[in-house]
Image (cartoon, rainbow, N blue to C red; front, top):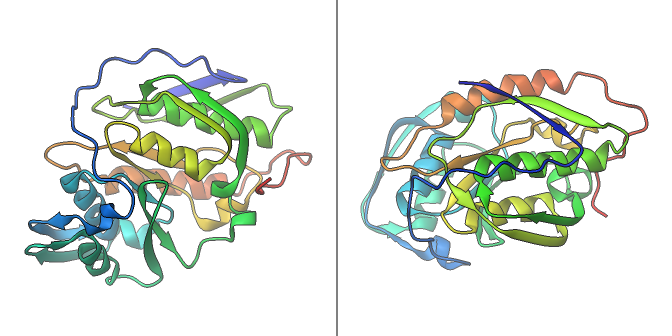
Length: 257
């Protein structure tokens, strides 16, 4: 079910229900990719689903900086015995061109050569301050979206957009950042407590646009793992069409500060 969300300036986040998923936090730092995977199988699924199935199976916080229709629809199949997470990532990403992975802020980041440079990329935009109590992933995601939108469009008094609430409800936080990038804060959300994943739902061109809009989804992990490609594919056309809309002439350029 799709909901309509509205906010006036900064949202006073609604208190969320207790999490229905309880898992221990995964490994941190470089050990994320050095963890041993007993076995992994992804049969006839798109690249992004394969990545998210691995992340859910191994309880790895993940951020995906790039998606397109191909990565959400073109099927692949892989199967491995005992190996490291890094080997599985390389095997999955070998099915497409331009992809790479790294570990940043305690999260596995899936990048791509087609992404804009940091000084023209909204993921690199730095907020002077971001404070949030312990709340659901949905609430934290919307609060961060509003914080970025308010920075880019300070004269706009309210924001509204559709969203599909994540199930199950998972809590994260509290969070406190100073002079931190959007990507750093997103990584904090998905690695603070129960691991989760953030995934961009826009094309690289939108990351350079003055229009912020809805840029990402934060996805909870489930057992058995959930395939999220249909949800992400539904969000992608919305983001493409939104990028063609005009924005106020006096808005700030997206840039690191």
